[in-house]
Every structure is written in structure tokens, then in C-alpha cells.
Image 1: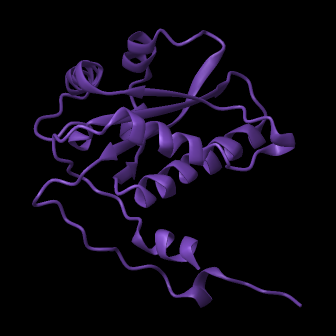
Image 2 (image 1 turned 30 degrees about the vertical axis):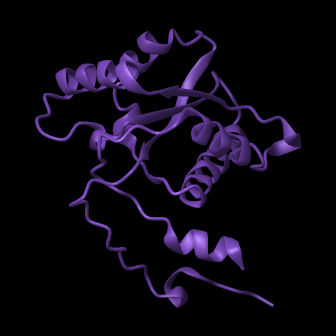
Length: 170
């Protein structure tokens, strides 16, 4: 099963190289991710992507806001922000999460690495300003995409035994 191998290949990269990602490749990733399920097929998410100078501006603002030295936003060259309508029902966030995970899997399928992390949306003001986000949208999720740095840790973290997380009733 192809999806199984993609799921097993996906892991979070916490340090990206500065190699830029081709815009056509990014479009292919998002076109595939659009196949994510959503309640009543509403597809309530909107996606904002920062590359190049926009990424640098967001990183600078984030570093200043967080008083963080060293790696800022994992050095990801592509910053992805997924929004939903403000005041949405809980299921809308579920839909956005399904879309976000679809982005992560499509990225792997296209040879990219990724990381979903709260750090990307920790200071929403910087993102709102950069993209001039409409007042009726709010950030739901942030992701980093790109190619791993040469010395980036690529080991997969262990998972709990299946019997600790799975209950099946017949």
C-alpha cells in the first residue's frame, strides 16, 4: 500500500537547508492535499504560503517576539499557514487538521520534508500583518516545508505500543 509507506516515511525535520522549493512543486503538493476530506465538502480552509523574502520577514518578527536565538521556525524556507473562518464550529478545525496532514503526506510524496508545530502560529500578529489576513479568518495551523539540512536529525521517534492506544469492541 503506497500510503502506508508515505505515512511511515513522514517525520518532523527540525532544521531545514536554505535550498528553495520550486513554486510548481508547491502547487502540486497543495493540489493533492485538496483531496482532504471535510464535512459536507465545505473545504473551509484557506492557505497562505511564505517563501523567499516573506519567510525572512516572518522569521525576523518571530525571533524578535520570542527573544529566540539560533534556529527560528526551524529554518524552514516555506512557511504554510492554514486559516479557518472565525467563530467556526469545532468540526472546522478537524477539517483543517485533515487538510494539514494531507499537506504533510503530499510533501513527502514529492520529496520534501516537513514539520507541523505550534511555533508557526505562536505569534499570529506577524502572520496577519505579512499576509494582510482578512478579519474574518483565524490561524488554525502552521507548517514548515523544505529540504532537510545536511546534519538534520532524521531518526524516527518511537511510538507507544499499539495495545496502549487501541481499544476494539466487537
